Length: 292
Image (cartoon, rainbow, N blue to C red; front, side, top):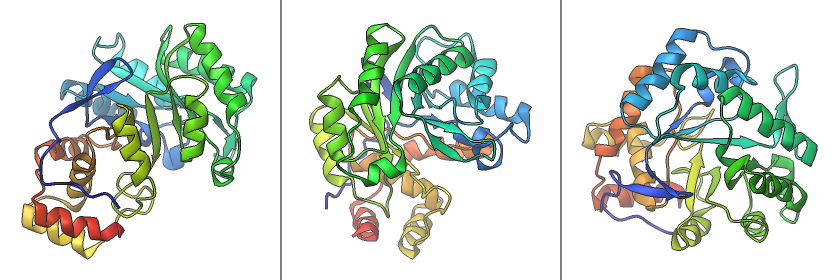
């Protein structure tokens, strides 16, 4: 298992496509209603969070048109357009929402084209900066499942100038390599956090090639990280456990870009303050042991 050092990379930047972004960004998923479905409880508050993120220096926002669906992209458009030149908006395709809020696979070429067009329209863009193909969980578990048809359709839309760069999400290492054999990728977005470390080798191999790794559920997702060691380190550093968990990720590898999400301005500021936290070597050793 790879470990991190006490050296802080937190204030740095990393390449995402051909743009440099701060390593601490913002994930917009939580701006939708409960279960990432329907409108937000407080429309004005959702707009405020987006505007505060950008005014605080965030230059990388992660979204998708299946958040809502359509809700979050329209909020981003309303809050931030015309977009600052330095802002990189990353979206993902590969799913649609059922009327009951269920997450349904939408991996066929015609479905992916519709999804790209929906993202363009609702974000108010002529071209999407980065589009991740989200692999359906069932297909990810089948490690030999080919994503060629789906990724080739996105590569075609890239050639049509609808998409600038491609990435892949919720993918096995084999699916990442299959995608790279079809078209260049600029990021991989997979589940990874202090307690879930399956992608350690993938992170290191991507770092060696200058490809960004973007962990989703960096704080455990719908089951937030719980650890006595994490709490103890946080107490010593006068930080929250979630800040420490984010700081560990930033120190884990320089190619990790974080997109913690929130619907609260106060929580947003707490997340962004993580960039100032430096974990000493003894704390890193304690945290590493959580995922051992």
